[in-house]
Length: 174
Image (cartoon, rainbow, N blue to C red):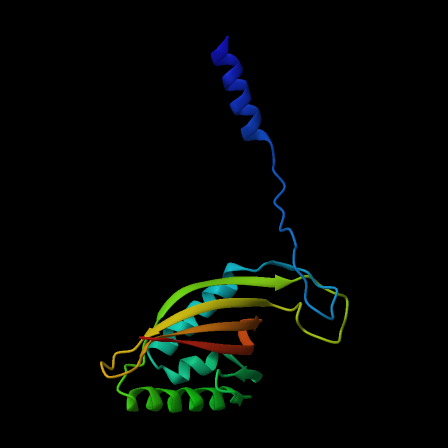
């Protein structure tokens, strides 16, 4: 009898359809949007861009950037086109290497968020997904006073292209 009841419970639990929900939480100031988990597709686009960047494949990097974008580097420079973006990356590579370091990093994490539709045509925050990623770059110069740099970056990806990007840097001293 116990086996029969157990089998019925297992069968009943397997046959029930569970509603999958994507609960919203948080807020975005000045909008009615709430924050939800974004798509894995956006994370996959980020991973491809990160891989191209690690290989310094500038032509491939440009394919992930929208023709008109706002790309804000940690030092305040803002690129507006794919070419300006890769030109700034090239100058960063030169700067890092001139300081005796290797231009390399470890990608610590990445996840995607999205915003619910706020019904307003005034912004595009609710279009696409926002990938949040963190990177750690260890100093390879033994004479440097810097142990590592941690970068926090936000990629707004719409229709497979980065339309907005922000990078912030935290320096960890030895």
